View 1: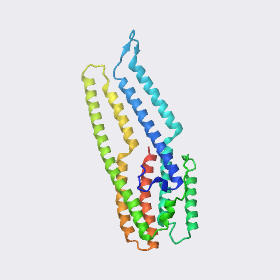
View 2: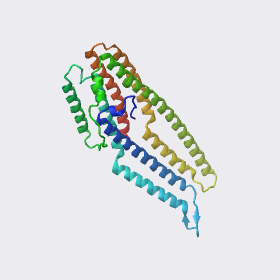
View 3: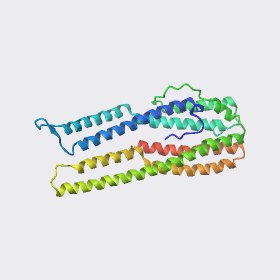
View 4: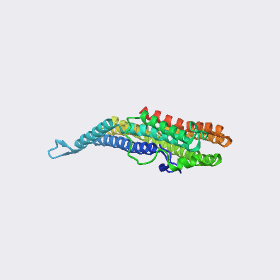
Length: 297
């Protein structure tokens, strides 16, 4: 979910880097576990379509395959329940994006770090905010990352003129984020359409298979197997949340376009710091929507 930026991650606070790494690891573990569990269930369903007996005819090999697949699914589910990588994913993403927002506000002089306050006061305020954020998610196990909370890039940006900070913020934060949202909105819309078409094919095939089973004497039980595959596809779609993400990203693009227009008109430090705060609020709204959809799963 994290949007890439032309500003390297090494320029962001240590808390961002540690939480980002923890979130990415949690995401890989959670999505991989869900994928494997659903694959095991599909294998178990398909193996029950026919029987394959060997020896004296008492041992059904495919039945054993189904049993092993179910055991694999149980192991994956138990592992996900015990480790909760989804929580590390969501909480890590929340901490990382919040830390990035604070870093940008500090770097370009947005509230609550306007350029007019003393340098040590701004630094202390940023560190306090990062500490509060870390305490709010105290259960999150952060990845070990050696980096400063206030990078040279952040300090250098803060010392620039208003026009220089405006140029940096518009190009490397706002427009970069907007382009990423637009790309991901299109991607998720396409993936949603592809998966819905696949579901239609599976459900139609299941209806045909069930009709054949009803009118023709056969030992093939394709209907239940196709139903299981369709159920696995639905569970995967719910995990990926393509529809809700496409809507959230599209709305974020509009919000950021409005924020861009206002930022370009900000001709004083007082107005600028408020508009930066509003722009970061618009970016944060997308993060809130994303977290809300994930915690419904």
